Image (tube, one colour):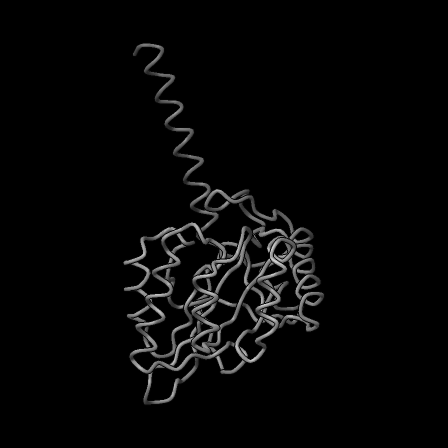
Length: 245
């Protein structure tokens, strides 16, 4: 076998091994599902939750929520809060609509067993997970005057040890049952269709920090379709929820 072919084969084997190792590690990590427990019969009941990881504010979504008096739970990072004081002023002016919760300090996944996930560097240790959680909590408390009760980590995936540690600190973990925009990466029509198809009891995740992405238009349209169908919107603290792996 020519030397180049042997080298190529060895590289392929090495990559396969590394990919298999990463996949094996990920298989032990957890993406929690969260639903509203026993939604009442009648109109559809859903919880809108929005992540603000970094970047700016999608005014299209924020305006839709405020103008139509639609409650939502916002998960914000410290890094987002530092850059979006004006948006937070709007949020704080409507405490009846918005619940602000902890999305971490620097948007670092609460994972200790693999070095990265979806291209994002993970915490790598329980000490780093604790810094991420505590830094986000302090920022939320300084911005709102209230300690957060919920935590949603970057990527919404957790290693088991990190999950246990965060829960031991008293947090409820915010999973979801319907991923509306896949990190604001989907086309507007797809996002609108996903949201409009929500079932009663769904906890919907979308992003409110990507004003330059088409996904935001889909979020707005999807919400409008839910409103037109008589859907009832709730914040996470307003209802009993049920989590599962």
